Amino acid sequence: MPSHRPGLYIHIPFCTRKCLYCGFYSVPSPSHGLVSAWLSSLKHEVLHYRHSFAAFDTLYLGGGTPTCLPSEILSDLMEWVLKHLPFSSDSQFFIEANPGDLTKEKIEAIKAMGFNRINVGIQSFCDPELKFLGRRHDATEAVLALQRLKDACVESIGIDLIYGLPEQSMDEWLRTLESTISFRPEHISCYELTYEKGTPMWEMKKQKEIRPIDEDTERDFFLMTDRFLEEHGYIHYEISNFAKEKRFISRHNIKYWQHVPYLGLGPAAHSFCGSRRWWNVRDIKTYCKLLEQGKVPVEGSEVLTDEQILMEYVFLGLRTVKGIDIKRIADIPGATETIYRLEQQGFFNIKNGTAIPTLKGFLMADTLSSILLT
Ligand code: SF4
Image (cartoon, rainbow, N blue to C red; front, side):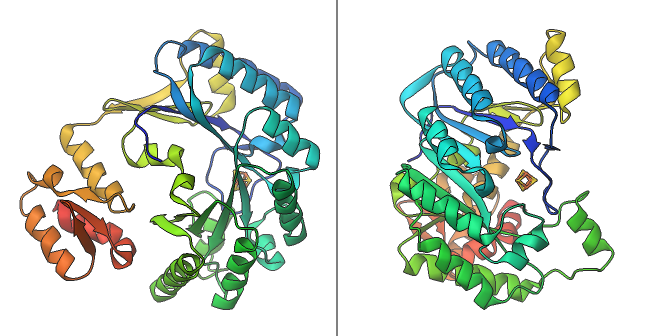
């Protein structure tokens, strides 16, 4: 459930190898020396923020691939973080995992470190699709990993999926969704494949080796996903996110969408507090060097004006079922009237002064935000 307490994000900047579509910062197959240098720098960064934030109620270990690190490194990191940063007793600890890393021993080790929410990057249960994405696991490993997590009684299992691959048929996507719900995960994220500049997939698109799906097909995938998961009891609470019950809505991600403070540690991590946002350097060696010199590894920062905060509030509110408090947008010329007009057209439901996007609203979220803000 939502909370106003701060969240902590730690970026693990390593992967076993890079997937073809991935724009996140990570170094493939890092040497032992690089991992040690990063860990020691991260510990310094933790100390820097020791007295800066009130007790966190979420910790999210993302990346990169946290589980590609040996359990001893992860556990060393966790001990340090829990010793030096404050956490409330009801904290939720999330970790992103790659199916190929989830041996029985690894799962037990992760649980022993305190992680109660494991998000697995499954992406698809179809081997040719996994191959196309450049993932290092196959469908058999995906199934095995999820069975092991089930056997280990992990409190909350999250499955991340990607749809809208070129040539992917609706039936293939439906099969992936069916396999997904057969595990009854507590949380499911369904992201449309995007083409990030600088990735091999971007290059393939540029060279016309692949052809992205068109807008109508995007819409069909989105509607089918919503229909299928809602029919199976999942709550569609954000454009790309579904929860089995309200209590499994990601407390951590909600902080990003509701301007709740969060601290991001590690290379390329972003932070937000008050109206200030800042981000770390996107290079491990520079990150380590700055911390060695006793400096913070911050590359840039910005202070958001009230107007920018309001714009983000509208933009983000349109992406979740929390919606927009109509009173908050009263000062935007014409916005209140527009909201009521859009309600008539089926883009919102208005309840107790809050405009909650419908499925039609989710589909048009970006357009609605520009309509309301211009
Ligand atoms: S495992 Fe995740 S972070 Fe690593 S390259 Fe693949 S998508 Fe990116």
